[in-house]
Image 1 (cartoon, helix red, strand yellow):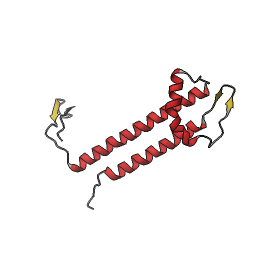
Image 2 (tube, rainbow, N blue to C red):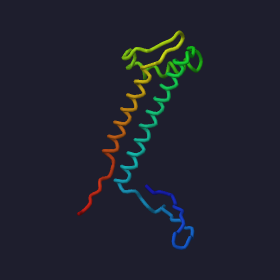
Image 3 (tube, rainbow, N blue to C red):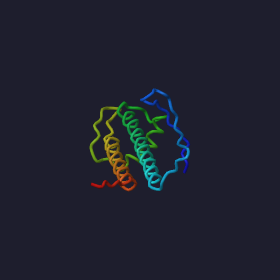
Length: 134
């Protein structure tokens, strides 16, 4: 794989601006593996972030007593599979017309921990190891 990039900077000794072309550099297999691992970690955190955002919106809607119509209905439907495993674990404090969705809160915590675990495993299996001779 060829990288088509350049680096711009200023030479500290004389103040001249320089441009270094990196288009001839190819990645080693280890670098490719590390780059793929970094991209996979980004995808894992993106998915976890989207699920958490969805659960936060759901929790706010329920807390503020949003009616099950329109956009709120869409959020409730799409988030239901993500909160289902955690429903009923803790009681949901409520007032007439609204309640605190403890299942959504537990879901945010659990999905974040799962994402962290997956990202850590990816990082552990794709990072390069360096040896230092003493």
